[in-house]
Each structure stands twice: as C-alpha cells, then as structure tokens.
Picture 1 (tube, rainbow, N blue to C red):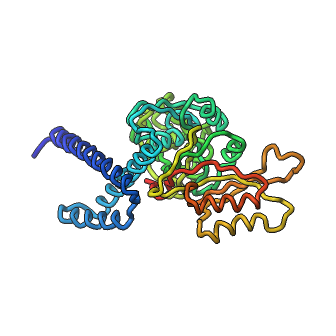
Picture 2 (cartoon, one colour):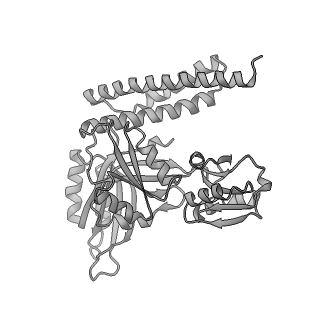
Length: 386
C-alpha cells in the first residue's frame, strides 16, 4: 500500500493532467465559437447539453463514478465553456480581443462578493486585470466615467431581498452603459483560522446583511455568540485574520477564504441556500450583441403621470410583440422639477436592441413616455449561474 504522501503526489499529478485537458477543451471551445460566429449559430444548445450530460453520467457509472458527481462537475465545466464562447463572440463582433489588459472598479475590498463577481466576470480575459476598491456605488460610476477603469461592477438585485435601490439611484443620469451581467451565488460560510468545533466559537464578525440572511443558523447553532457588525465582509475577514484568535470567526463567501488564509469550516449556512445576487457590468463603451446570443436590454422611462393608462400602454406594447419584460421597478426621479411624486421606471427586457422588432417597440413606446433612456443591450447571463 502506498503512503499518504505518495497518494497525495499521485493526486497532484492527476490534477495537473486534468488541468491540461481542461485547457485543451477550451482551445476546442474557441474553435467552436468561431464556427458559430461564422455561421450565425446559437451559442446555447440546451438539448445538446442535456444529451451530453446524460451520456457522461452513463459513462461515469460504468467507471464507478456517481451520477451526481459527474453532473456537478460537468454542469460547471459547460457553464464556463458557454461563458467563454459567448465572451469570444462578443469580443470578436466588437473588435475587442480577450487577450488584453483591463480594469474594474467594485464595492469594498478584497474578498467581498463584488470583488469575487468582478473576477468571475472577467475570467475569460487573458491579460492583466487591475482592480479598484471603491467605498460607494457613485465612486464606481465616477471611476468608469473618468476612464480610471474600463469596467464597473454593480449589484443590481438579490434573489431574496429584491432590487438594490442605491444602485438604481446612481444610474439615473449617469453616462455609463450596461455591457454585461453575472448572477453570483451568495454562498455564506463560517470562516476561521483553523478547524474548530462550532461550540467553541465565541465571537463572529460580519456585515449586518449576511447576519440577517443566516439568522436561522445563528439562532439554532450559535445563539450565544457575540456578533460584531462590520462595514463589509472584507472588514470581517481582515478582523479575524488580524486578531489571530481561533474562537473568532467571520461570515463571508467560501471563495474569499484564500485571500486571508482562512478556512471554511461550515458552508451553506444561509436561510435560503439558493440565493444569488445579479451584478451588472458598466462601461463607457457599449457592446453590440450578435443575434446568436441571448440578449437583454435595460432601459429607464417616465410616463405621462396624469394620463390614464400610459404605463399600461408601455407594458402592452411589449406583451403584444411577444417580448418578455423580466424586471420592472421604480424609484423617485432625480431632478424632477416641480413634480414631487414623479417616478422613474427601470425595465429589463429579453430582447436584442438591434432586432427590428425591438426598434419598432422602442419607437412605439416613446409616444407613451415623457422620457426614455437605453441603459444598455448586453448578453443575458441568467442561465449561466454556477
């Protein structure tokens, strides 16, 4: 029988082979993306993906692998592959290669969900990515508008708590364009200096929102723990790493642990384990989305407030054209003049702005609105959460 060190060395060698094979797979995916671009073929083929998963699970079973293991691994691989193909095609159409340097502004510091989402969104770039830590959403907008960074990452809504109104407010009147989105899993975990029994934990550091989102776990498992509220998840991680007290822990993303040499000792502690935050990526340079990629268009508008049915007419225009309006929210309008109660509507539509049908809709609803602004048209990523 081999020793533990020999077994670990064997695992390391196998993992290196897997990485090389994954790289080979991505090279082929690049060829596929070019073929799809040349022939205007759809990037996402859900039937093909499902058939492939079924086949892989059957092959895995013959090798003694569990179906769930094969499914989880290849679902992630396929999601990354689709994301890469999509990024390749969009970059090619907009004549902006993926092999280049870029930069992104995000809220908080290293280890926040905004930081992690920024890296995941730009993970197809093969160049240097400079990051800029910001203290507010308006700082992110300012960084992009001034050219300090190429991109800005903004959390726009959460699957549990809904729209993030502060972001909707800073988008009003800004010059940036939405060029992409990413749905990032909120995988709250207990992070500690070392492996420790949950009963030994005395102090917990976290932003108020994760504490609220993990309230059931904290009430049932750690009802007597001292909770220290911090300004951000990264502040919580920094505090635990600096104090070096094994009984002090933080709540943050599982993926943030490596940035602070911490260890996840309990995963998926949120009340809702299927919790996602949708981030939008903004830039001063809009993108064109080719027809083979599922697109989404975001816009803002106001309606004639004292004209009955004006909002209904806008919504009916989308409905009658068979275009799905997937998100509608409103905020008090800035610079609203003398009308104290004027509202600005934010809408996300499943449709490509370049489509003649969408152009016709936009032209039609302008007559029902007092103002209308296109925030951006970009590839939809709601089916790529992983």
